[in-house]
Image (tube, rainbow, N blue to C red):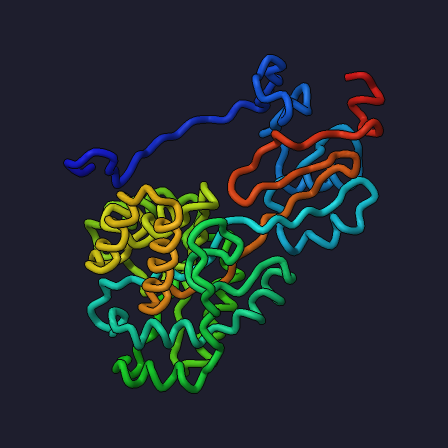
Amino acid sequence: MRAEPFACTWLDTRQDRTDRVVLTANTDHWNKERGPRLERVVFRNDIPPSEALDLVCDTESEVDILTEISPADAERVQNSEHARLYAIDAMRVILGIINHGVEDAPVGDARTRRALNMAVDRDGLVREGFGGYAYPAAGVTPPYAVGGLSNLEPYPHDPDEAKRLLQEAGWPEGRALRLATLADLEGVANMFAEDLRNSLGIEVDVSVIPNEELLAAQHVLVEKVMPLPFDVLVFAWIDLTSDAPAAFMHGELYGETGPFRAGPPIERFEELMSEFATEVDAGRQGELSAEIDRFVYDEALSVFLVYPQALYAVNRHVNFVGYATTFELAETEVSEEHWSRKNGS
């Protein structure tokens, strides 16, 4: 915790999920134009993802929508008799959090950080790692965000220039780069590591944080009282609003009170964020958001990898409306052919 209001470095809450959560429509809501369009929604927490995929693809009435489909399963959904694949441009980014506090390698040097970015074959990562269901990342903000577009282009894949910059920054001879990753991003991390090896000519040690150790690892990153055991952490982050990305995406990743900042605070970033936080004009706020994204990009504060799409498997008789931010069902409805209407349930 910090002394000023609205600042908290860690809030550790745990709760067990019930097998099912049932939402019943409020038919007296004032906004009749928007809905409700469904009488009841049942969230099922009692089905493993692999089994849920079988149920939505091969049956009716058990699962109508399955969230967070892996790109590896997209073709199965597309070929399914009962389901359709929805690919939503989401406010998400997968990037490498750079540990600016490293002391035995020039990770704090912008030339090193730009070298890391220019070592990445983003087109290959989109194609091979995500089956095409992603976009090459340029900065933190996806190009389809409502506010603060900065029209950035991804760093070019230029191994020769990347190696030159790394050598110019003085990367120590024989020093391996320490790349950490969460378990569900191991495939992405391995592709990224191979790009670094091929482009920079250095060794890359990849360490995977097991799910059972994730909470402890999060504490180390968020509390910032112990040295971090990585140079780059492959990390997935989201935005909860599509019109002010700097407020949640940039602030959490680089801000002085940001839980995922790795290294000391950055004075210019804090100046921009302070102005952004007090700006009430939407147009100026968008300009500041773009300026923040440009600063983060120019300084290569992270390794910007991809903007992944959110993939859903949806029953063919469900008219699903996806959102760039949260998972909502306010505008989703079912057709007359849906099992619930045919069965009268």
